[in-house]
Amino acid sequence: MEEDKDFKEKEIEQMQNTPNTKPKEEGTVGPLIGSIIVIILIILGGIYYFNNVDLVSKNSSNIDEELLEIEAEINKTNLDDIDTELDQIQREIEAELD
Image (cartoon, rainbow, N blue to C red; front, side, top):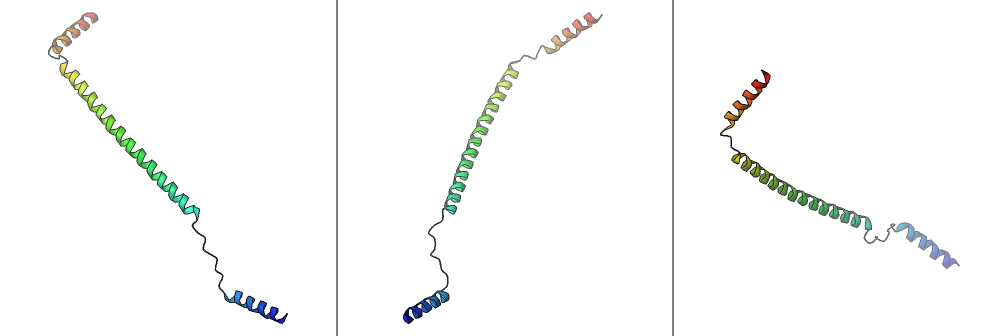
């Protein structure tokens, strides 16, 4: 019985002198999930950015085509007789007013 007491006292003494060390937990899930979320956000941001770049380049080419069409239409418009036509319109208006 006395040996039991001595053994328990030694055990208690060892426990008090031994620093409290927990076994290190192997890998936590939090940082892994956080990293995955960040990677997914970066990928989605890249997809969004590159889709916008494509849309901008398509829109700019459409604008260029529209400008070329407008310019071609202006060039084929005959403005040589515009003074004659304007004079005729002015005479018609004056005739209506008199």
